[in-house]
Length: 268
Ligand code: DGL
Image (cartoon, rainbow, N blue to C red):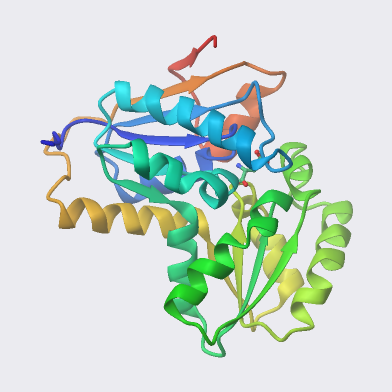
C-alpha cells in the first residue's frame, strides 16, 4: 500500500486523556497533521470488558482509516492492553501503541531491572506491560498496581492536592517496597501527575511517561518508513469526539496544554 507522507497521523483514545499523546506529538513533530478521536460518550474504558473494548476499538480504528491516516497510534493504554492486535489485524497502515513504547523506554531507563507499572484495572489485569517487558528482558521483575482513582482525580484537576498525594502514597507503597528504579505511567492521565508522583516515588525512581515515549517511537517510525511530511505550513489538527460532556473544553485544554479548536461530534 502506498502511504502519502502528507496525510495525517491518526491518534485515538477512550476520551480526552489521549491528548497528552497529541501534545507530545505536537512538540516532537510540529509539522505533522493529526486527526484525534476521543470516545467521550463511552469513556471510561478502564473498567470495561475485553469484548466491549475490542468492539469499540474496531469502530474507532475504521473511522480514522477512512480519513486516510498514514499511521495509527493507540494512545489509550487500556485499548492497547487488550485490543492492539485487533487494530493491527484490520489496519493496512502501520500501528503504534503506547504499551510497546512505554515498555521499551522502561527497559532503556532501568538499571536494576526492577520496574513498576501503574494503570487502570483493565490494563493491569491484562498484564500487557509485563508481557511486553518480558519479551525483551525475561529476567526483569515487574510490579504492577491498578490505580482506579487517578483518572477521576486528574479529570477533577486535582493534580497537586492532598487527596491525590495521599492516594498516590497508598497506591505506590507496595510498588516502592519492591525497590523498583523505574515506574511506567501506564495511563493517558498519569503524565499530568508526574510532578506529584515523582515526589512520592523519590529521586531514585525514573518515571517513564508513555506519551513522550510514544512521540519518540512515532518519530523513529516515520524516519524509517520515509513518511515525514514535507509540509512546512502550520499543521492541521482535527478532533473527533462522540460527546461534548460538561467541562470538556477546560479538561481537554489541560491535557493538550493549549487551546482546543476544530472539535467535531460524531454521532454513532
Ligand atoms: N485512556 C485510558 C487509559 O489510558 C484511561 C481512561 C479510561 O479508563 O478510559 O488507560
